[in-house]
Length: 279
DNA sequence: CTTTCAGCCTGGGCGC
DNA sequence: TGCGCCCAGGCTGAAA
Image (cartoon, rainbow, N blue to C red; front, side, top):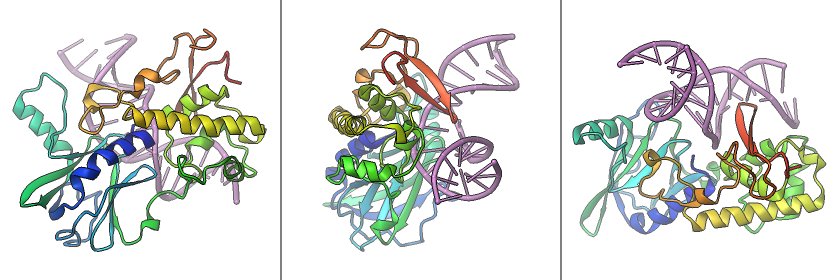
């Protein structure tokens, strides 16, 4: 469930490891989903590691950009193995890892060979090579960027009458937010997920902007949110889950007003919120 | 035009 | 014990 803070964490951890590495070879294991032009990558160097929305992007020395989107279960690991459930024998564990391996690159720097592996259990993740960085991302505003202001938020909303929850999840408006952080932001702002965006006052919009930035920054500081052991791997040892106020807390008393947190499904997605203090 | 929604995909957890 | 069903959720493209 990587959202902006989790992707940012992976980027921060990979940057010093991958910077300056030459890509020696690329092996695509999931050829049905991952299409890369043959021979277009080997020989190039990784200039840096950056984040564009929820994508992990490697600008290459030849001017192109190699991009990974983890979606739900994608993992991008350097010189390490996919952590699999405990209790498996070594050969079972390695067979499971091989089953989920989608792409592998051999890297070289200062004569040392290393590898970068892309795993993905559910195959939603994507890998692509583009010649222009503008081909990446989904067009939304970076919530931690300078241009995410109250007036930007107002113009993004425009004449939309969508629910607040659906609006905040839209990557063509604001990038990086997913279900967990949207639930947390709305709790913090005291707003009901089904409020329509055209009903919001200036003060409420201002609260959304402020809470979005505060929560994302705090989550990045804590290296994101990690849920189960299975998903905990290099680059995802986050601890923000201990600060979650509503997500996954259905049935528990609200930390603000003691009302029981509810979970409600709308449009196939679960919203966690407090019916007592989110209006 | 805007908005909603099924489908993609697998493994874990639950009820029977 | 094992089978069927539901759930996680970002994003696309089709339908409303």
